[in-house]
Amino acid sequence: MSKGFQRLWTPWRMAYILGDKENKQDEGCVFCVKLAEDRDAENYVVWRGMYCALVLNLYPYNNGHLMIIPYTHVPSLEDLPVEVQTEMMTTVSKSLRLLRKAMQPQGFNVGVNIGRAAGAGIESHVHIHVVPRWEGDTNFMPVLAETRVIPEWLEDTYANLTTILDSENDQA
Image (cartoon, rainbow, N blue to C red):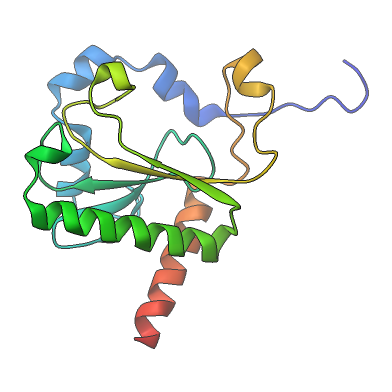
């Protein structure tokens, strides 16, 4: 090892890497299961609206990666009633404001992967991704090591985001 060589420990990824994805499909939609539970902190549900929830991604592309997930289990946006679509888009705006306040990103990726061909990991339950970005946040790790570098624990990100939302609600 050269002087200055550092190890990057990402033990939380092993459950995803080794997970039995076929058996997990038998358990039902992971989004539906998590949103039906009354364990928001454990499931990283940051906020709940009437028609959708704002949730931290367990396997984030980047630190602060949020998902807007409707309570309705459908594969595509056009399958949702207009009031659900509307709340999802206002939740995108809420997410941008929240992440700007919490993390000062320099940009965002906002998108929906509809269908496996478009990259949907959970194609049966549509959701919107909101990913904060910073200049210089790309590096060699995803290319050479198939590893993302996430500089903050999900618990810390969750605590920061919910604290900001709670303080905003107290001011309202």
